[in-house]
Image (cartoon, rainbow, N blue to C red; front, side):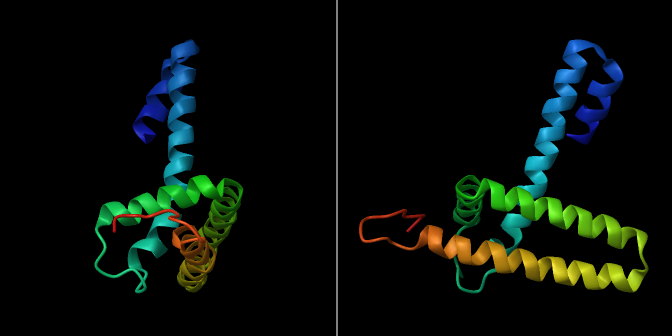
Length: 126
């Protein structure tokens, strides 16, 4: 997507700008889904489930809570940008803190999304 973004920007014109815009939104979506996927994939409460079920839960989570996930992605982008400028100790602390924040926001929402709610509910892979 980054190559498409660069080539679309360099091409110019309507087609180039369209490609660059789609690639930029693809990078934003990948950023948000990537942060939401990590805690779901390594959650010990979901052992032995296939990768496809984890990714389905992640995508449903992002669709169910788009503002929350976009805000989380924006906050994490700012945090990591600031820590990139800072010292190496701050980088390691901010990466650990980022993973804790992501886990705190994503796992409770994923649990609520997968919990049966008095009916057949949302059944994912099993």
